[in-house]
Image (cartoon, rainbow over all chains, first blue to last red; front, side, top):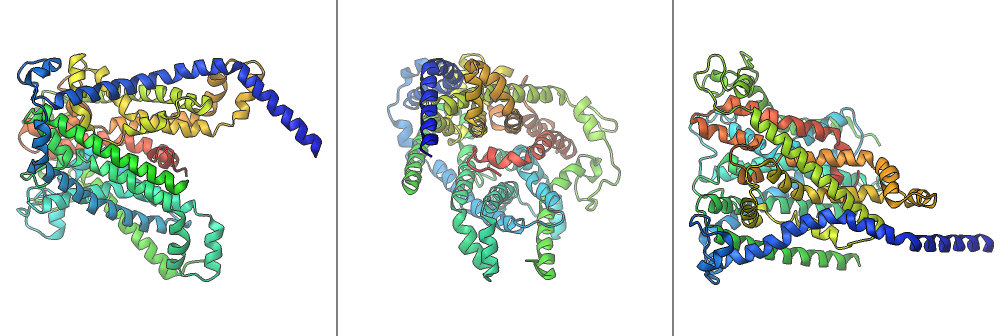
Length: 312
Length: 285
């Protein structure tokens, strides 16, 4: 016993000293390995950040022929920031983005959870159904936009199936445009929830589940008492992922409605796109973008700190 | 514990219903791609399967004209298809190569421990919030509407996925194998190249396919950073209507089908690893 421990110890010692001796080469190679990623990050984070900060305190637009580095000629202090604080269109867009998140993400979550629960056991045809149910999230979002654009046409199959007249419009109707967009988002991303939640559910130790079943727990009891508590991390991951992606939503909406009718489906991304290419107010967009960046960073830092505290 | 027949029937009913909901929009687009003009709308009655199946829509997008159609197209699918392929592949190569190297250094040599989180931050922000400086920079270095300009941004935005995915694959390689090779005199580079890389080869393939799907699926970045020469498939598909005035449902559906095929095929191929990829390696199946 002692002998064994002894040899084990010297073995480790030997290995450590060996590694120390050559570690310098490793560090050197590691440096070269990290370099490309580091340069890419530098290129996309540091420089653009300062440029965005710089442009956001000017009235610069690509229209007037002033090169971006001379933007100080139209220095405007914090006018862009003052404008964004009271811009009803911006706040409206933010509210609509939040609305889509509030409706779509929970819907995806509950549907995904229900589907995952059905797939927890083996049954004939499981693999085939599983593959079919995953398809939507693999389809290019722009194509999903096209698919629902086709479906919701006045002369499309939805109206025909529901027995509605061809002039019953979805995408150009003030209220139904938003509903159509949300349906499309739910259709595409429920599978993602399903996939992640199922993976989490299958990670619940099956002997615990079996024991609970044998002890006579009802399905609902088992679900709430055994499965759910053990899926907490997975649920958080799934919800955070979807919420973050939902906040960015653009492709689907821009192809289905272009943010219309009017601004009825204009989310924050669609709004920024229109400001960038329609109105060419680049310094204003830079100011909004920077504000979003800072707010999201603070939220992310707080969230991470909270998670770390919970785990620690 | 066998579920009762009633419960089983109910279960199948729900699953079949879900499948029907999934297939409904898909089927409409796919059949639309094979329908001639009169069947595009439900004006003449709703038909699920094409009554007179035709290749005309595909012919039209590939050749710019088709028999029986008065309109013609000045720009066929060829350019966008090549653009999509070239930029997705180059972007994937950039992301996978730099992500693989960096994650190996982080996992094996314990370097740059803050890198994983800073890389992850790239995925947090809406692209449009950070796009102004990118567009100014791209214009400044002449990268707008070039294959390398688009590939560069693709490589950067998918880098987090490649990095995190490869990180989890490297973490699964037992360090003892590498130690053994080191002790028998292999240099670090040889250990990495000859031992570790072959072990993670399946992971590398998964990672590449996954990143390719993401790049291929992009619409927004191509919309902003290309104008004509390097417009990609989704952008081309979306602009088809506005250029033609009338609604080219059938042609758009044909384009949609073509754009949708590669990700679905690749996605099914790497189905086992999708969870890992989508959750940045936090979850494994």
